[in-house]
Image 1 (cartoon, rainbow, N blue to C red):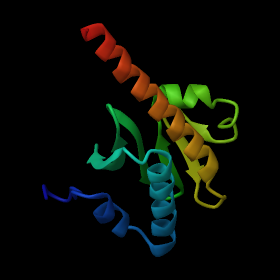
Image 2: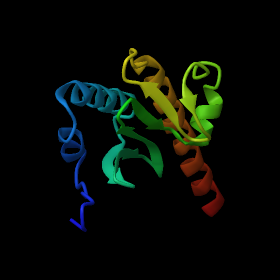
Image 3: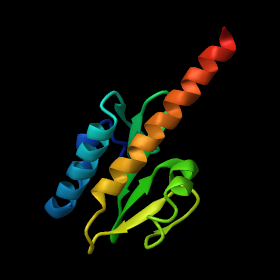
Length: 129
């Protein structure tokens, strides 16, 4: 630990720092990602929970008033219409804590990102041959 900055080694450690009601949401987001990307590896990256499969897939994090979901800019662009009611930026979406979290949409975005990363990995393999 450097100064006051906490460094997390696991997603469990990260989730445990939040109040129980937020922990439940984070666990459900985590489960949704795992079910949508069963081969993805869990890790901590940029001090946030992340999943990787042929490169980074998605990140998520809890904040005071929202859950941040980071599916890269392609994940946002592909689901622009469904995400229009949420605040966000180039590679981020904010799901307000006072409203239902769209787990089904998270699942669709993760599956899209898996397909995207797998295709990219396959294309790179073809180039090498």
